[in-house]
Image (cartoon, rainbow, N blue to C red; front, side, top):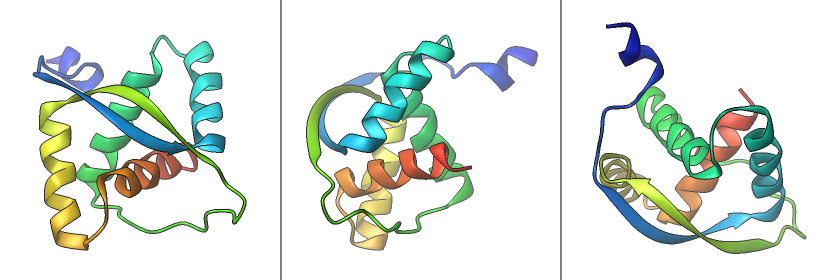
Length: 107
């Protein structure tokens, strides 16, 4: 169905506090003003894209980068995939989320 290409099916939502690199978060804020999507939705899409493409590549984080904690509503299925990737790659959830955002912003 055409809607499957543009929308995710309903899923349980988990509330999580995750540290995001400040520069990545600022770019997400800018995009939320361009797209009909909240920062939460942008983060969920970034996570699902990383999972689907299995693109877990570390990026060069600037030395002086500051991380800020933000509350997110993460799709349960996306969070379960983050937990699986965390165990597989020995990376924290916060690091995986930052990788997902970075990849999405730079694709």
